[in-house]
Amino acid sequence: MKKLRFYVALFVGKLSVLVLKLFKKNATYMPGKIAIKICPDFLKYIDKPKKIIAVTGTNGKTTVCNIINDVLIDNGYNVLNNRLGSNLNSGIATALLSKATLNNKIKQDIAVFEIDERSSKIIYKNIKPDYLVCTNLFRDSIKRNAHTDYIVDIINSSLPKETTLILNADDLISCQLGKKNKKIYFGIDKLDTDVEETNNIIKDIKTCPKCDSKLKYKYARYHHIGKAYCPNCDFASPESNFLVKNIDKDRKAIIIKETRKSYRYYMIADSIFNIYNELAAISILRIIGLSATKINNSIKKTKIVETRINEEEIAGKKVITHLSKGQNPVAASRVFDYVQSKPGKKAIILIIDDCDDAKYSSENLTWLYDADFELLNKEDIKQIIIGGVRANDYYLRLLFAGVPEERLIKTVNELETTKFIDKDNIDTIFILHDIYKYDVALKLKQNLKEDKG
Image (cartoon, rainbow, N blue to C red; front, top):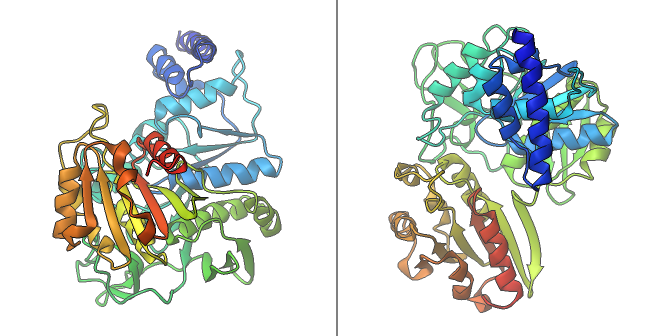
């Protein structure tokens, strides 16, 4: 009876894919949702590729998955992935049933799945990854993931013991995942910009998880990222199997040291968080057997998707659109740090407000006071133009951050933000947009092209 329900679910799921495509809709999660509704054990029974790579973590999942997928496909692998769908169980189910035959056979060599951290309990009991990459674990949206301890417990309680973990050695939280699993680590060696102690508002781990003593850092990078140790017991950041020894931004290269040899790779993006993303992807690709040469040749053809970051010149000004996730204070802080590190006189358009969409809105604004808006209080940031129905909230937060009032402009109408730009006094325009506001960012760029700004 269970198998009969499964084949009915498979048939109906595949049929729904065809129907959705007929109506020019993206078959991202609904077919899988239907299949699981018909057969709750659908993920258990559906055929799977022989090798499965999963990627999870607070930030960087999509970018890491995209790099892995692009490199594998460029090297001739037949890859199954959920890059066009959701990272929940319904999205995974859709990806699998879309490629399965009606007699439940999948031809792909390998699967690469982006997996939401909270979905671990549902997914890993039926899909056991050979490898699980965890990019990092930070405090996330309060309405979804809350504190890191909550997410760590979910992942640890669900991990198959046979899964090999690829973890960020510089992240004091995610590096502790999987007490009984085999672990391989990646990290970045000490940088000139590292400090003894960070001044970020958020630091999700301050004391030793073994003895509760205050942790000390050999060097700190941002938030709780860095190389730390406990002065009173043996707890310390693990050593990296894949270690970035040098970052050459002028030549767009990173040097990664493995056990006895170092390899040079093309650097896709120069932000430190994207270097971590690229490093995570390279680590798993090396682990499954691709040569450094093949990886590097493929990475040269790869770029961060435009919904994450895009740069072009418009009317003599550099215009950069950059994803800045609302309700995610660490992700926003990393983008703010990246913006303030760039040379020249800058104007920033902030549209990281998504509360006009009832599905994703939140009345909880505490995340604004966890994000480091203080990083935007810089002399070379000449203007910050805030758009959206919560413009007043962002305006107030920036005033608390010490940004002079004369540099701030606010408007409820996001599409009119470009008209306030003082083009004669800036070199670069940054449009920082929420994940649900990419269409607005594109319209703002079009405004600039049509000289509406």
